[in-house]
Length: 128
Image (tube, rainbow, N blue to C red; front, side, top):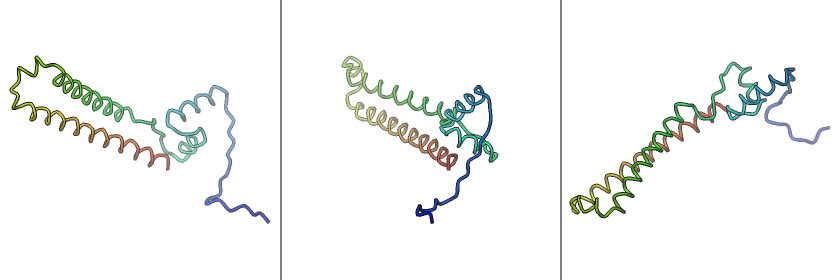
């Protein structure tokens, strides 16, 4: 009698034959999808379309929001380090202006977090 515990689901091995070039292409596509070659072929075989690790459009959104955060941070740094520019502005308005910039940074951080959650959720849905 076998003393090993039974796996939750029985797994079977499927063997395929392909050229070295096909193997390299399959492995590259699997890696781009964040999957092993086995998982990649299983997904394809079950009629699903593997997606890249990060969808191109989601990547563009992340880059855009990151750029916005960089520009806002740079603007805030400039305001805080350039006394000549600060002197041109009414000192009584500075707290309001700085709070506004900080608010925009926080909004961009929330947007960035939302995009990241969406990316991770789509990866979980896909790899499950």
